[in-house]
Amino acid sequence: MSLRVRVFILIEAALFLLLAYKVISNPATLVFCILGVLSLCWAANMRRGRLLRTPLMIFGSIAVIVSVFINPVAWWMMLVGVIVVLFAGSKTVSSGGLFPWIRKQFVSVRTTEDSGDRNAEQHQWIGDMAIGQSVYEWQDENISVITGDTIIDLGNTILPKRENVVMIRKGFGKTRLLVPIGVGIELNHSALIGKVEFAGTEHTLRNETLHLYSDDYDTAPRKLRIITSALVGDLEVVPV
Image (cartoon, rainbow, N blue to C red):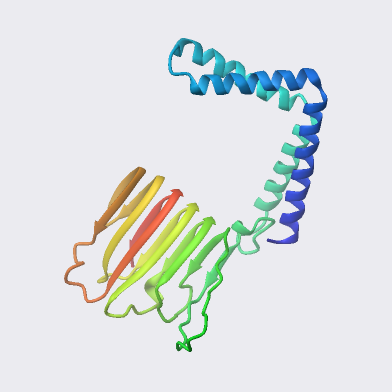
């Protein structure tokens, strides 16, 4: 995490604490905010009386929003966030701007002879990742990332004549795999919300698991097993 990101988080955290202090130190605002929260909780847990649920949710939402945004500190928090987003958006994708997830990361994978020692490859938790920008030797991929887009290009490598594995676990973001024509593909993907494009068809997932095979999976000498999961995000498998 860069210094600028830490400074931004520190400023927002300080403003949030100041906002909380302002709300707590004002009895009228505090009571109004508590009433709003209680109304929302009551409406969320209400099993009967649906006619009463909507007014409670409207009142609770208005009460919480007014209690927060009546304080100038909340507007300062929003102003700082907008300025930072605009500043980051003005940067090019290659430079990355303020946020690390704007910057594209290219990783070329190299295999080494097994020496018996611990061989760990560090992956970033947040940010876009692209594997296969240049020619590289293949090794099975196992990636975990919190948020960001991931691109794996298999066109610059030669897959061994066996079952190769790509495993990706992700919180939020899009995943794209570029697979050479002639490779048999097995796809096992699960997501809370997202879409899957595979073999020319599109599937929409809502807390579902999708298990598909390419038409040439049984006869292809080189096979690729793709195991992916995401909270929110799309998956695209593209033949190249």
